[in-house]
Length: 271
Image (cartoon, rainbow, N blue to C red; front, side, top):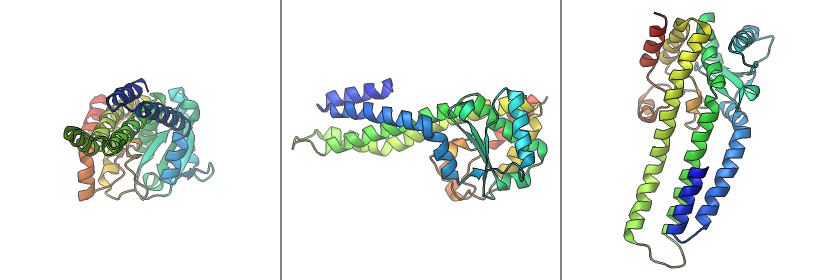
């Protein structure tokens, strides 16, 4: 927030409009508070997840509960995503307000040890506070993008004052570059946290091969999720966009490291 306010103050002084500064303060405060308290509900709703019935999904609940006890975490809420594409994600601002969601497709293709590997990976995200880190990144990128939009507006308006042509060029470049810069920041942070969650999950189950085999099976599926979104893609254990040309373009800014590299690191832990 201090970083965003500093940018707002500098730009407000440069453009002789302190409304940019006030805008940066208000937007960063609102988005930070809203994202902190509501990010889990938004993620669950956007994925179309529903609470997992404890009778119907008893094995899943048992795996989550046992691994949560091993990790020293409260049992998170468990959700099912009615989607045949195998995937999973965790959300929540802290262990006491966490949730784990898995797709029906994931439950159909994984055996018990592989499912334990996936759940351990998601619990590692919860224990490492990765969801909070991801939320902060998303908020920062969103606020910076909003500030860039404000610069664009001021560059083409402002009491009839003429703006220097260089400022118009800078405004155009900023508008074009800001989404890509935001995606690069988000991808860099998310990739690092995926490697850490893989390693932590493998230590939790003491069987790295389980997660490695699960990642192989999940990556072999090229069916995109029905509710795949670039806003929540970084939360899933694997790229939710599936295969095809479109996914190759998205992979340029993928929030997930290559599966082959993740599997190689996991298998090196089992040696």
